Length: 349
Image 1 (tube, rainbow, N blue to C red):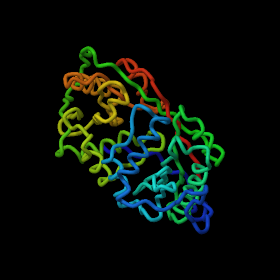
Image 2 (cartoon, one colour; image 1 turned 60 degrees about the horizontal axis):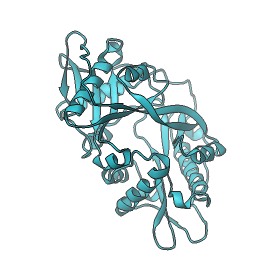
Image 3 (tube, rainbow, N blue to C red; image 1 turned 90 degrees about the horizontal axis):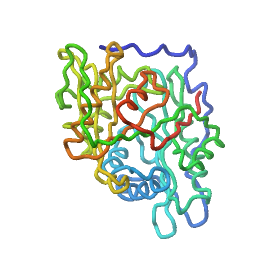
Image 4 (cartoon, helix red, strand yellow; image 1 turned 90 degrees about the vertical axis):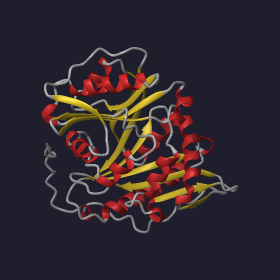
């Protein structure tokens, strides 16, 4: 089942010889009355509250849950003292938060993600620029200490609806690399049956299948832009979140081989933001040897129907508009329509 990854670029020198070391990486400074410090695990509720405030400007239909924030802060590859910052105003209220995350065990790209942002009421004061300068320094410090002989990417995302974030990234040297569109479909009627390929059956996600689904995900996404294998620890954290719905997720099996999957999350906290109840399809994939047979569409149609039978009103997902599998067309034929868009920005070494 394993699909070979695309060939690595012919790089003869490690990243440490290609990425200049930034020197001492110090916490951001200013403006007056603002205190910067590293985050600690106990900050999770305040960070979740800040992210909810940021979502009203950047992506009003969703925000990170407290469980997701706690999980992100607890990852073993995140060193809180060096990879996170928060800013507090004179009253001690958190008004900005940033992280620098190097994902573990890369196979073809060393990726360092720069996440975070500033409370909408405090934008335009230089906080975002100060935090991004720190993130760039820490990200380059990460890459400049790497022995990997493969490309190194600094990555960040910005919503179309908050163009000031994209402008800030571009001014810092990032280039727009990819566009990810949010799609929604109503669940007000049953979908026409979509036949499965011969010999394939579908079952709900289960703990017994989890590792096989992870390996199938890594194989299915090997030719997607910027994708790297998900390590077991990160996968188990994801499927262990309270929002993950094994009963709504589906796995396609040919014999005992996982050949496709659709994973589903439900976050009731987002429903008031959206104005409707929904399921979110986090991953849809088919391993390469089984593409072109209608499997992805059949899996998604089944997920949509089981979501409808649970009384949910809409199904939501995100797609890379240049996805090599033609996923956008599959989704549109199932009734999905675009509602929002994020831009992936990168600096590549």
